[in-house]
Length: 270
Length: 89
Image 1 (cartoon, rainbow over the protein chains, first blue to last red):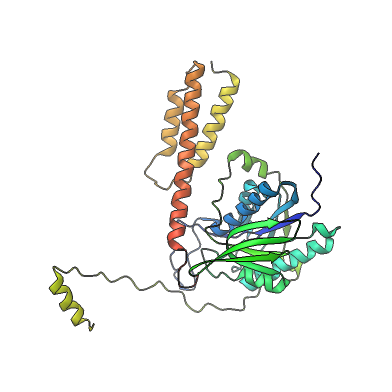
Image 2 (cartoon, rainbow over the protein chains, first blue to last red):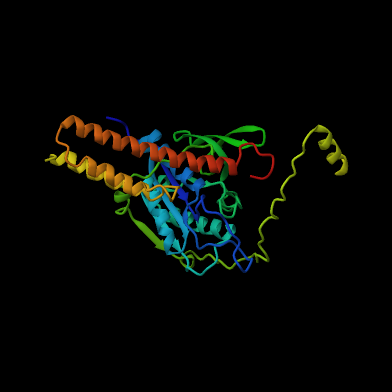
């Protein structure tokens, strides 16, 4: 008879419906952004985040009480939540915004996540039902901003461990050992819960959601909310003036021998 | 006639492979056509062992395809976001 865990972990995993990794990005005709009429799927870094949450549950078993996925987006974003549920999340929250609305800015996203966490914690009957770990992707592949996690940690006043390539949670001690990917190597940190973690590519390799799991995921609950319900204003603070493609690569020239190479280099002023 | 349990397994395998085939990166490779042909070729098997082998082959194809997708994706991503790059992540 295993004693029940004295300390429980509630994980929140924000995910984003982003342009699929295999799509060739094109600038839209108005030069204000990229063409979004293309295939979308869950941001790969967010898949890694969901995978890490599910692996934590596999390692810590009953200590992980809940894994909740959350996304902000139009109706189609529900597919991203279904993928997260199929990978192993228990329930999901969909913050729905109109189809025509621009993508929310990172600060708005962070404020929304904070509002959701505070709302949940306020309703939590016991101390141990509060959200203690938020795992997000370090950046999304369509905008590469990479700031939401940090902003969220700042707004919540929680510790943060970004670009995590290794995560070990000690639920009893309420501590997390993290290795962060930094220039030139890894930085080891010991953090206290509650914690915001952003995932680096090398953290894990996400599982494929098999068909039986996808079927099971259809029964898992998705709560629907709007930004107004949470009192967050999505008015953009930034205006994108112009988006343009990088200049086309000019072809290099081939040289016949070393002398010609030296001559060309001299011509170029070296 | 295939007994019910293997029939169900074959159907589940077919559905899973069909779903996997949707994401196949090469549009000129007729994944669905090939899967269909392979299943139809074996639909009249009666020997237990032959059925098991056929199911194992299907499972192997499923794993290989998954490995293909996963490698392709992560190779692409690792090129896009190299480790220890000295510029911004």
